[in-house]
Length: 170
Image (cartoon, rainbow, N blue to C red; front, side, top):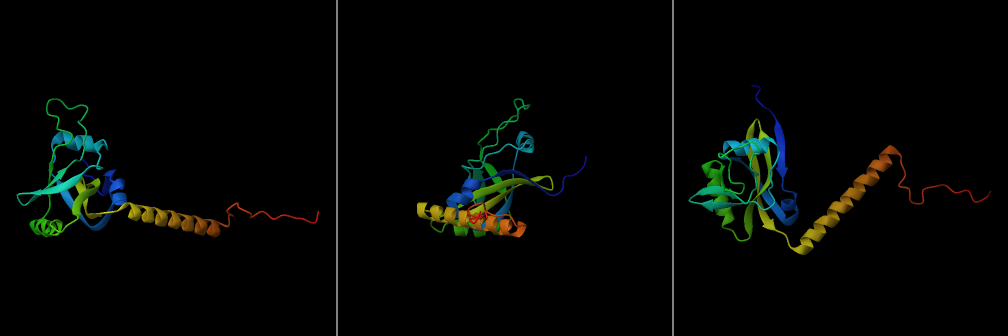
């Protein structure tokens, strides 16, 4: 059996980056059952409602939906069960201290295979207000227009608006 290498993305939480300011990013392992891994290899997972909670000095990932494996039998898993996060003890204690700070939460940003092992990228997040979301959308749109203009200028193409030469002395 050939061992996997590199990083293969399973799911991404785009809504998380839109709804929250991400202060810090952590990588953690997950405690999974066999049918969960098979379902993830098929590329099926949803992170939109996920969050991490602290219980007895350990971190647990809740709200992440990993659907049941189609070919699984009575050994199938619960799709929305809590899963334990695997991190080093000093990282967990540091996170517990920062999570006690008001307004912070730990959300999953992406789920991926790293050298054949399932990892989750967790973000220490602070909620955005509605006006912050509008501002970030405006910035994103402006940077997209700038990139488009620069690429058109580099290739020598015109934007199409008023760029035709007109001869008026026919």
